[in-house]
Image (cartoon, rainbow, N blue to C red; front, side, top):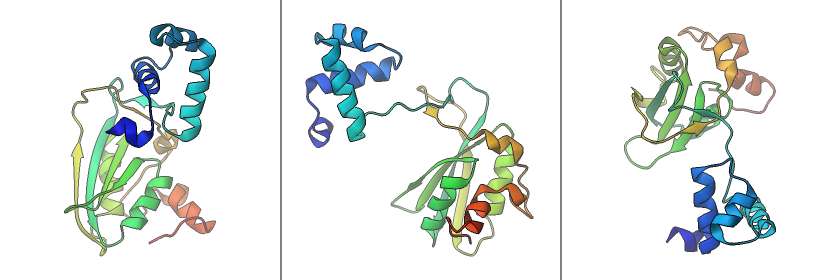
Length: 182
């Protein structure tokens, strides 16, 4: 059971559920709903945050904006490179290591579909370590999806020859010795 694995009691579960429903709810309102004092709720929320179980994620609600959001599935001999690239690339919201046929899945976004296509073509297609790549555009989202976004992606004009060019955060990190570059 998830609660046991996370060491959550009934009050913690109630608090998390309430916060997920309405992240703007005050501690006093939460306390009233779970029949506990406001200081108790404040202490429990702080404990949940410090343990990493509860986090408040600022970002864009992709259900409410008109941005292109896509998943990219990749089968590669070097999944670590893709995971590291996702830490720097402003188009890549996140990357996930997978078991199965594809070993990396990425979420990418942009206001223009052409940018996404160029990012995928430059970084993944025709690379010797990449055995397969597919990109699917997300056309609908069932629930709110809040993800951080790097607005610097709007300044980049990726192309097939140079990727994002001199402004590429991954290349800059490599030059500073922070990241490995392919």
